[in-house]
Length: 101
Image: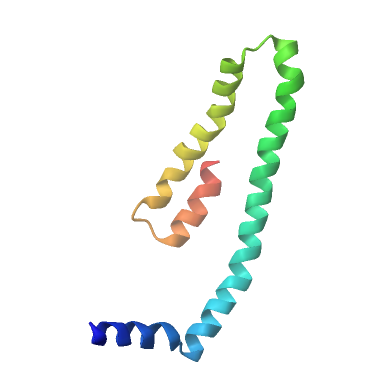
């Protein structure tokens, strides 16, 4: 038990310089992109909610019909992006995703 505890302490505390710089570089490139993607996702949902205020009354939609219409967008995301888990190379997926849209 003492050996596993000392091994865990030595691996968690000792990071190499290249590991630290790699994590820092990835974080500086990835975190801003993820924040931007989250912002646009939030903006999309807010716009959908604001459109429900007037569109439901004008078109006489029930909340169920509006929910089905909003869900169609996410079904489209799933259909066109499920290829990302395939065995294609990354460059082929990156080129194929915009082409499919």
